[in-house]
Length: 126
Image 1 (tube, rainbow, N blue to C red):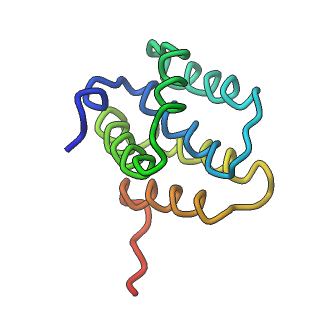
Image 2 (cartoon, rainbow, N blue to C red; image 1 turned 90 degrees about the vertical axis):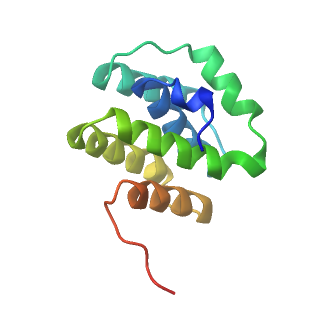
């Protein structure tokens, strides 16, 4: 069950968490990434975002909770958005993941979780 922090997130906050977590998944970060993500979210969703608070939350998130948090914010964004908004976020998320022209295992897992949770792809049966 999502925490009250997740349940209180607006669309911009949930989108920020999704996109930043994807940008961090390859182990390298660029200072401009958060600004590019923020510009996208402000242009598309324009809801309030306390950048410092959200960055600090993600920074303090224990590694063992990353996947759970990612899944929860996927669900939260889904519940607050329409199909067009989700597709724009997925397109932008893929640009972030592929900005270095490769996808590592963690990025692949997270992007697949996002696509599956939004029913955009079906899980592959083992």
